Amino acid sequence: MSREYEVSFPVKGDNFEDAGKVSVEIKRLLKGHGITGDILRRAAIATYESEVNIISYAQQGNINVRVTDDSISINIQDRGPGITDIEQAMKQGYSTANDRIREMGFGAGMGLFNIKNCSDSFEILSEINKGTLLKILINR
Amino acid sequence: MILREIADLLDAKVLAGEKHLGVEVKTAFSADLMSDVLAFAKPGSIMITGLTNPQIVRIASIVDNSAILIVRGKIPPDETITLAEELDIPILSTKYILFETSGRLYANGIVGCIRKIEGPGSVVPL
Ligand SMILES: Nc1ncnc2c1ncn2[C@@H]1O[C@H](COP(=O)(O)OP(=O)(O)OP(=O)(O)O)[C@@H](O)[C@H]1O
Ligand SMILES: [Mg+2]
Image (cartoon, rainbow over the protein chains, first blue to last red):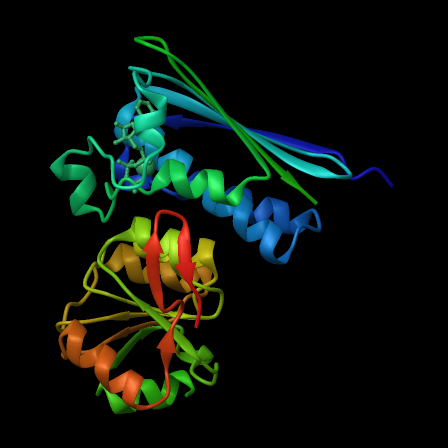
């Protein structure tokens, strides 16, 4: 039986109330497709951080998850301001989060660093005033 | 300790997940920063926090926390409790402050998820 599986969810910018909803659903779906343990957890954490970044910084975005026999690839694309200095954004502690984001318990400047930590391969492509694409790969 | 013993020790109200009070807990992570929970909490640990929004439940579900322990006597809004029942995450609420809560648990054998952070990306485990 093939274990290939793909799913996509839109994420709306500024919708703090629902922050994390999509990631919780993706975790549930991945679990249903036989992903467990550390791999499931890493995929879920990377997705959550990315979802909160869309809500915090972009107008709208999309999370696409593709499961194959040997990997989980998660692509997060948003329409938003883009990231001017990717190297700086990746640094732990660097954050431009506003009070609203901080009130929710976010804005520590840990997100992108944590996403990278959870990934076996991680790439950021960003264009100013267009948007950002995160490509996360986790081996099964 | 099991969750029921933690609730007794801290005179905590059980707001969700009553049926999971027999779950054993060995580690904890105290934080009001959810980014830190996502980065450092370990599966099975209890999340100790002063936040009460529904996000704490989603994060607990993502990192596989065994329960959420809310401090300073805060009672979360109904949506947080409803979501906790839905996602099967027990919520306890104690009147003790974060420091007292953490200290009392530590004195009873619960330890942190990690020991310290030496530098970027360098975590010192237990
Ligand atoms: N999708 C995005 N679009 C535009 N800017 C972004 C995006 N994602 C991150 N950034 C920028 O990079 C910075 C660092 O992001 P990162 O996720 O590491 O930390 P944070 O969101 O500030 O805090 P945390 O994730 O710890 O809650 C952000 O403060 C923001 O300036
Ligand atoms: Mg972030």
